[in-house]
Image (cartoon, rainbow, N blue to C red):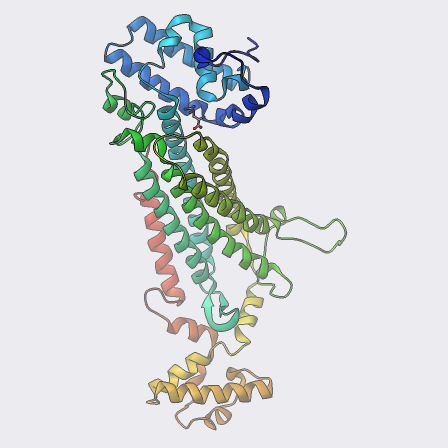
Length: 472
Ligand code: ARG
């Protein structure tokens, strides 16, 4: 293994003194952009093969380069690659090593190319794979929610507005609300993927190259839709990274809302659910504690990802065309956002479907707080009372119930009739939790039958996979 600390940078020709040691460390990115080595080597392979096809590299040189790149991949994966900060970044580390391994043919690889189109290509390739991985995780979480929704379609839960008991809902209906958020999240990733999937390779430093390159060839080899249309734009804009982190921020915002509910629901003040012990931790001082830390950490990571989004937007806003070194600062926030969102979705995909609903508690909670008051008002409307009058009648019945400490369903017929003569014996059917839930029997409503139909539609969508990530 060659020790390359202190090696001359590949651009050293016009310089008369060595780089200041602090500046070398300050400007280096190899310690984090080495994460792109697979994409960098894939891009170099496609570039070399294209240069061969258009006659810039001969067959022997091309074979040497391809073999050399394979050897470098093996070296990196064995942890034996001599990474060096003097060589700045992943691109120059690999290129220099290639020349060390294969000799002069290695010096020809950079013909008609710049690190500017190289990094724009690498990040797009990396992000495309990351989006595909995140899409698979989202789909696994979606499927877990659909399973849970089906299991708990009949389970009554208080539905809240303003965190006050509003109307009884099916627990499954609540899970499907989470599912819907994730379906839109998946769509945003799909849109981002489609827009980033164009090849910057061949843009070179900013203006293109004087060699007769074939940009369609490299675009196709790398699984891109087409070559990009403007060299200045494609080496400089990082809007695709911003779009991804924006989509990731929305995913995290959704997960954070779920996290908040999971934390509330596990609290002894609610006691709606139990999370498996393997997803919780204890307290070093309070022996009784079982804390929903996974949910809290997901809620906390949301802040990081939103910070990453802000970093990238601010990074871009003052940049003139074309490439500026500022863009090197895009990697860490992008990687951080991607790691945070993938880990968070994975944690929830594992944990949420494994929660146990404390059905007696959710049911009891739904019965408190006059959750069927709207049902009584709707009943009066069906008896011919105008809705605004019905609202007032039920409001007075609720006030009486609060004074008496009793729910509407616990009142006698005579007590209810004191508020309206339109109330008959059949009123008690609409005052039960089951009656209330079943009555909302239309698409998008909380009736258990509707929940089951929705889970069936969701399952068909997930199994058909036509919304899923495409290969690349
Ligand atoms: N490491 C740089 C980045 O991440 C790519 C290299 C471009 N450097 C340059 N001096 N043109 O953007």
